[in-house]
Image (tube, rainbow, N blue to C red; front, top):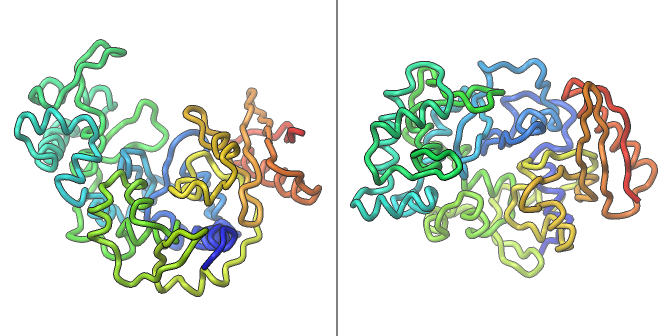
Length: 363
């Protein structure tokens, strides 16, 4: 049996959130991908894990639409294995991942994987140079048959379904240009998908290594995959542990790390940091009211991590070249803890290239 604190400390250590500095090659979260959503996205997540992001270039990082169709950062050197890792497990899995797009395809007798391959082939043919997403979508809408298309009321136009579009991009060997909005797609130079991802990039193993202990359902929820597909590929080298009475799995190689994990660090986690992507939210935040505050339907705040526990939320208030940080503590914070939070706020401001005008702690 292990308790919540052990689980949290294990994940802090596994994700290197207590690391002062480190290289891109050694950064474990890039094995599973770091979601790059919002201003404080992927590169801030790397920064709080000790990576000197100011010196990184597009030659070292690649941005891809992968898990759940979200943009994720990876090491460029790993792109072939990543492409293999994010492949749907089966046609049924592909159908779950593309949501409502699967229905018209089924009615037309088109397999989900075959559909992704068709979209990818068309995308590859269209994107011969950098192209804005909307232009790519418009071109595809002209050449793809009806089962692939939907009418978009807000745009008053016909588009491809969104999830097949996003999930086919990697199959087409396309990446997203960093820091572009709307997204700009272009070909990955020298792209070749690996035959297999290998253990390091296998998404089930990576989840267990970075967000374990976990159940097949939690991993399936993270991937948007059917539970039975995840169970069929569950690693054999796992041990069972009880977390708050629930049986979960951990890679056997990590047993000692779970038992001995200790974490002493203060970090301002971005709203979509991997640490917050775990699907056992009641473990991360046992109080349902606090969980609702951290994961609202719209407008997620960041989370304050102190010594392995989430102790509050934060929101930036930017004005010109300055920024204030509003902290909503969930408990009384000692003066020393507040000081470390202010230090991290200074770090965030520097990362954003602005001056910190103050940190406001709500009563």
